[in-house]
Amino acid sequence: MIIMNNPALEEFQTKTIHEFSKTLEMFGLAPGDARLFTTLYINPSPMTLDDMSATLGKSKTSMSTGIRSLLEQGLVERVWVKGVRKDLYQANEELYRSFLSCFIEKWIQSANTHKMNLDQIQKEMKTDYQKFHQENIAEHANYLYERTEEMKAFHEWVADAFCNMLDSTKRGND
Amino acid sequence: MIIMNNPALEEFQTKTIHEFSKTLEMFGLAPGDARLFTTLYINPSPMTLDDMSATLGKSKTSMSTGIRSLLEQGLVERVWVKGVRKDLYQANEELYRSFLSCFIEKWIQSANTHKMNLDQIQKEMKTDYQKFHQENIAEHANYLYERTEEMKAFHEWVADAFCNMLDSTKRGND
DNA sequence: TATTGTGTACAGTTTAAACTGTACGTAATT
DNA sequence: AATTACGTACAGTTTAAACTGTACACAATA
Image (cartoon, rainbow over all chains, first blue to last red; front, side, top):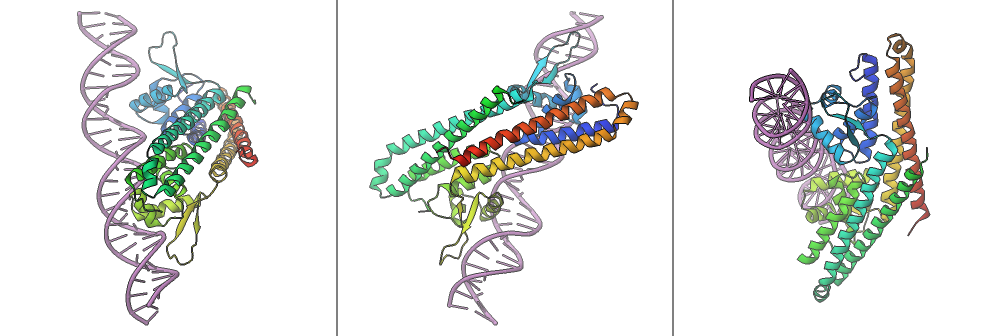
């Protein structure tokens, strides 16, 4: 089932992989990783590194590093099949839940991290506030502080919005 | 106000720019564009290409191409000030509304486009269906078709989710 | 234990993106 | 009209990412 035996069907598969990969890239997945994930997702059975290599026309080393990247992101899992020596991988089933929640959570976490970093910067600014005041650049300092305050609010908003999105994946819309 | 006159304050500004840029990159903005946008956003007054060049330590040409990119994305606007020959640019005010809606709309549009493309692929597959059936690979063809169907549903879900997000920006959470 | 097969570390290569400096078209100034 | 100043097109350079092939460590087979 892995090796295509029909040129026309293979063409469709390639086009579909290409098309869907672009969507995944939209979510921040690297182009190579996106192609690899889609390939696994589209394939009826788990694939070996050699299978992927053949399907995508890239080296086995590329597949190895790509798979590791996808594993770290929790998008792919390794499966064992009795009697098969090679490592077998498949896309984490349920595209919506695994892929989306993975990326949305990443976004939420990033937003929170960056907000904390901005908070840290603000604290340091407060420490130097007296100095700024003396040197007569208090206005600019205040302005910068105000901006960081806005940025923090922005991060908060983003985190909230994505949390809502995450909830809606859990409730299940489909 | 543009040229920094205090090393400590400049340090804070640089750190803030760097920090916030990472968040914007999360939304798909190219690193260079993100830095440029944040610079404009953080500055109290509109800036010239030379100002940006000085602040970011990059060439004027870079600023020129970067600004064009941001203009195309609607994230930055040109402003005229009486008596100033140079072009002046500023970040589109209201970060939430302009930036977010810009990117969310882009996502929605992408999701819809890709869904349409998948639909087109499905139509072409239907045309060849008889052929696949004769050649005894109907099973695989059906499987592929089923997958594209799932992908379409996924795109629909994404578009919906982002539409909700867009609504929430319009209602205004802050 | 010897041998074959499998995944990955590493170094070198290719490819693409980001950036720079010069040179030029165009608009403002005199 | 002449000159100055500004923005950008273009070509060349630097930088970083993606990819490949070889070589090796480890596990499975015999």
